Length: 292
Image (tube, rainbow, N blue to C red; front, side, top):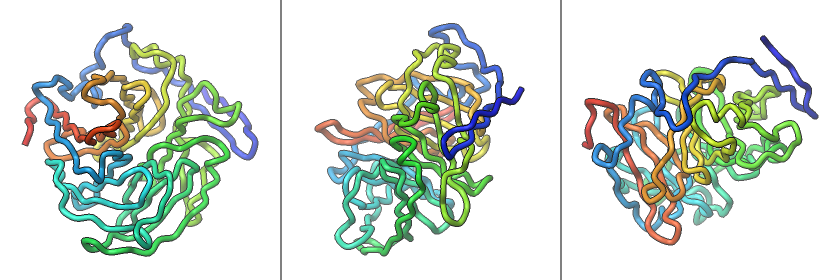
């Protein structure tokens, strides 16, 4: 059944579907991506990041398998070894690195994008080690709808995805919302990619609160993994927002998850701010996988 509601300047089309049911506290079903990963401490790998990434705020994997990260307030991009928290190079976006409230990173071919909390996109190209690269700014219009935290590139639809951390419209209240950015002008689609009622989270053993802080798309299945630093949890959704699974995170290992990526050996990589200490990366592996 399809239900359509008109929003001010935005049309929301909601597909009424039945989410995967799970008893409160039950683990995610095995056929889900989160259910296939081993979240035990012995199966994970965790390393601290250099001081420049104490406030790491985003991760992105390039098409050729290279891992990039950025901090919170200054546009400095770090290339990291995909299997270790080791910096291979860094470069600046703008003269001395422009300042801003940067909340996510995505790579679309040769185009890099940083997103601010107001939904502005800073576009640039990869630079050589220590270089300063030019940039352009795109006003997406998402800031009037919500505070943004996270950014991902969907290669199948050639669009960008922005999760809403704090909803600013009455129509968005009570929902997990992910806005889709499309077209040459990089504007918000009239139909959000994800419009998930919070009360559905009980089906995967979670409370009806979720404030997204990062998002990534699985390169093979197209599933969306959305992290929440505030709720210390992960959600797995289908590419169009149907709820599949949830996973709680250990607070001492994940004090503030701000980045998600997929790495070698089928691993899920999470980036956490240091909260006064060192930032860190954690790798989780599927059965048969192991820390590199």
